[in-house]
Image (tube, rainbow, N blue to C red; front, side, top):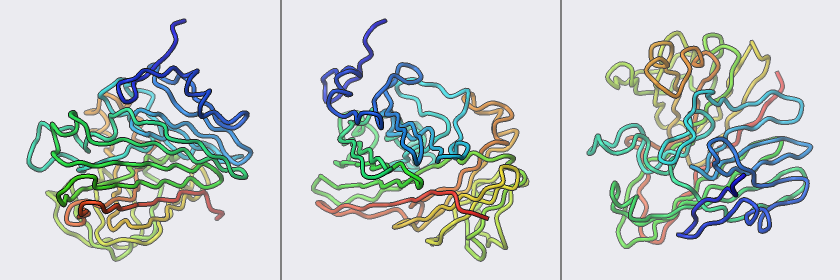
Length: 311
């Protein structure tokens, strides 16, 4: 079988070379994943997880004794230049379509880039994976600014995501960001998302009209809501899988809740027609009027912590 390699800074590194540098025996290793794309596989007494270098993309996390908390489409396309459907895509530097260029890739370019593996560290039952990417000719085609991103993912009984954005250029820029988490659920029609009662939101299924959330969020049809000025923790209540998923955010002032529903799923080639029933997105973000301004030399960190909590 041919040795699997990927490009890093115009050089080619094999999975074997990556393991020689980064693997932690019995805990974390780099393996060839779907589409021959390299991924970090983590297994500790606390949890297992998979993280692809393609997009710095978490595709699986299941704490010990639990089913996977992350949804991944069986129809995802594992190809360069395409986003993985499901998991936790990194959306940057815009969210949804780019306002001034409909030809630009949806949700930005970070989720389709190959990131550099910077380090693997192990403390107690948690493993932290650090990946990075930065501006290059491909990103400047769509966005003229100089930047560096670091995504630190800590896998344990809790999944911690830290997205660090650095302005490495000479001019201020504004960016949108999201950790677009697809949660695995028993039935999207039966879940509730608590923590947004009273929040104003823009309903993207209704011409982005501003509305006010009353009670818990329930899904009765396609939903694409951007909740504004929200910093509170969320709880995704799943009566079918009999579990609660808590999402705690830091430096995130918007929350997106999304499910394409039946017709929306059929319009997505990389999502099965019925897979919408098994997923629900509820995610930390800074989008729309809450885009982050960043001056030269400054950096911004948005954090999401995800864990299962008892009833």
